[in-house]
Length: 93
Image (cartoon, rainbow, N blue to C red):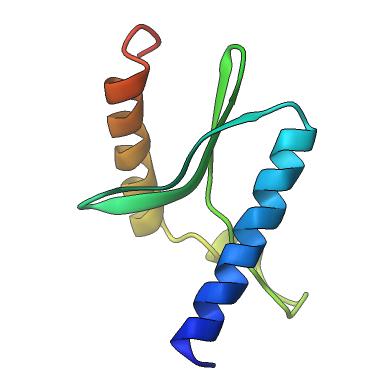
């Protein structure tokens, strides 16, 4: 699959998730929030709740959900989430 096609599919998946979050009453604070050590696809919030969302598109239903985001990626996501909170939500950290 060409990189451009993967990017298009990824963007479409993120759009679907962002639309769903909006319908559920979330405000989209950021998309593709990046630091040098990682990126978070969507950051959404409601009063007293901030969601850090990693979007994964899969066409094969036979996969193990626990393998989609390995520990190394989880650590990067946590670091980026902490940076976001420190910069934009200092009163809540």
